[in-house]
Length: 361
Image (cartoon, rainbow, N blue to C red; front, side, top):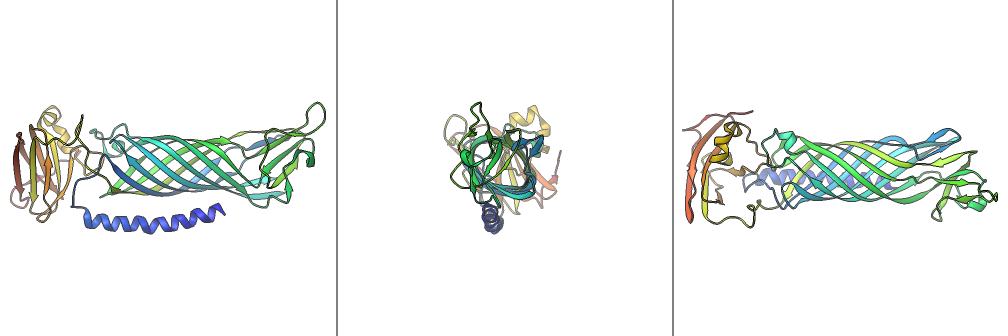
């Protein structure tokens, strides 16, 4: 069944995410946070509610609320723009006259993802906020559908017919944000809505008295029941999930207008494990509080990575003045550095000897 398949997929994905987290802990100081060209994988669980599939004799037929699972992979072409591939599951219970049926739905989609505030200086949760728009398909299966086929000639003149299995095109819209970050991992929340044609088929009685289907169902065993008056609906499924997302690859963002600038080089070495930020001096002069809002976030354009006695950060930068911030725990050091064309600036920082309390906002 689709539900058990998704459950097995989730049970495999959770150890994979745990492995990614362990690898991240070992690599946390190997380089910069990833911005462009970054992949992330996610697994999430929550609940979903599906609206009416049909209306028959003043009764509404809806699978209602059930569990939801989701697996996804995103690739960020730009800090703000990416693509997403996902597969998920949501379930429910459908009541028909005298019976209750378990409904399984598996959806698979491709979508565009947009982080409008990536790289800005807004608080952390808003920087990671994203919206997705896309489409795909949803496959629905209904338990205990019976042995009859959904064929007009075999049914009453007015009836509702629900295929045992059907696949419909689906439109997707969603939004989410990170609630907390732990290195390259994040706890996130997401809401989404999927719109698709109802799997229910309605049999109507035309003027000549011969029942016909409003749309032909697939040749499979189906569930049907008579109804004096019936109409199908367009289904909408609203889901909300909590999950874990892990950054697993990528490269540092290139400068605007081309590749990484090669006009100057900055080398940073810290005697203790520390976060390293580089803020243009002009930006810091316009908004001094920006230095209090720095976070080790993959959406930040100022975070360079982690450095310690064994890991040196070396970056090419445009020739201009910067404020170098090296931070560990509740201590930090700020240094003004001038990067010149064709020159290398080396900064070795000892926070134990020369530092100030961290400023946070």
